[in-house]
Length: 297
Image (cartoon, rainbow, N blue to C red):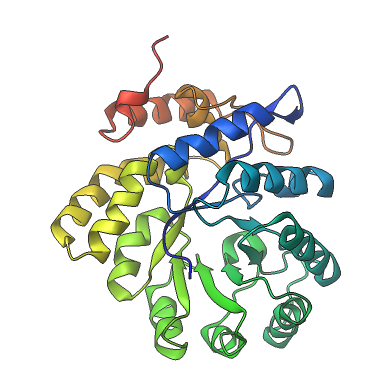
């Protein structure tokens, strides 16, 4: 159902408010550059720093601007099951094509608690649901055995897997139904995960280089392995630069440098340190996939 390069969309801010015109421009930028789907209000979109009303407005703007041209998978997961159900239902009403549900953070539920959480959401909506496993951010790892149980629920259609473990990816693909979509949650691991049977990526780097990231996934999936490998290495330094500081600081800073939108973030995210910004600028200048976009200053 969901495959290719799905971009974990940044949320542009200006003077403390959502910059709605800039958000619409970002959506059009992705539509013009081959992005296969958009994921607003995820970690990269700073959803935890927004009110519910702001999150829903961002989803609404993205859905309206996309206008059914590519799928929109709304980030509606929280560490509260009741709130996750509420937000997922509202995303369904707005017109999202799916919802991305992160594992409950800070609570550190057991595997059974995780299963019951996602099962409860699935019982309350017919919206296609994509699980999101990112242990480094949430403090809990959604194990392959639990994913396999959840994959038996028809409306749970895939997972964004960001554990960094190729063994875990292999176990998930091996144990879940054939149409269960495994999506990379780490840009630099996308190509290895595609080789294992993943069908795409939810990409941070795609905010900056959507055409190259989309082409890499498309090339591998159409048998052009050498071209996919070439693009992987063209993107690799940029992927690594996204971890110079905590996401979304590097990608938001890069978006500002490239003139895509303001680099404004909300606390507790703060401006990038000068030394790391210099490293990021060097990577952007050297990158063959973003260099043509650099704004002359």
